[in-house]
Image (tube, rainbow, N blue to C red; front, top):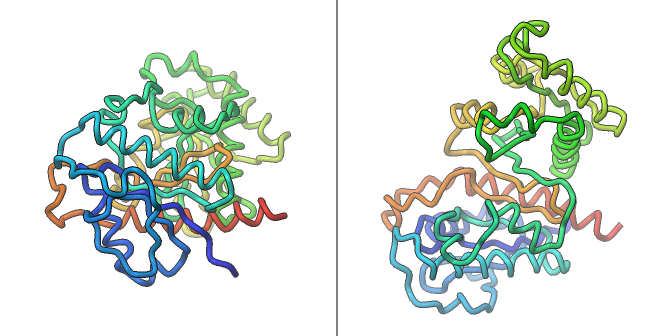
Length: 316
């Protein structure tokens, strides 16, 4: 099978990104999984001879001050992300994987969207449904609402949005190699609403959303009480491949407790595969050779799997 071609961006040059990329690429077991086009700043990383540097304005950029979220590294990141995304969108690469970003620097550098996912969607002129997926090895999560106040969650939930989140994670799991993913859906209220005693969103909104998704070919179980959904999901014999949650922390707390330094974020729903570690730039340890490369390795491995599927779909 032909190796996937990965556009690999070193992320925020003021953080641990260059260190993570260097550690990733110095391990031949991982670096050998793909053809790599490295988007980064020459001189900040020592990489194997077989890795191809992309010629771009940031290649020979002046040094950035470590641990500072400034406009200059924000512009650098936006230019690198745009280049990587355009390579995949044009077919020059099969997937984009990038090291951690700093949102304050991105905004200082010109990003006006709420996050890089929405920035990517606008860059790619994509108007369909998209959302953040979090991956911890064999367990994936999607959420119906994301970066909103908790008090707004209930009114934002609709059957259509629940079905869209189920469909998004179903398709993404298939793109990662899981042909028939098993999905669980969380309720919103304590004890799944206790037959309406603690809220009626489970029967009024979430269950109809699960039913709607099934008519679209995306079968899921639930809604389940959220305090036991992840217990069900990680069972070794009858567990689930993915869990759909109703709001941000409903899934994030569980995933980060289970593996903070191993988690991956996938920008789900977009027309190209994009992965990144599910942690930040760690300015406090930048340049100290203390960064744990585990999540970066997992993000790269997932980009390779999704990139192979994306290439196969493009050529079919």
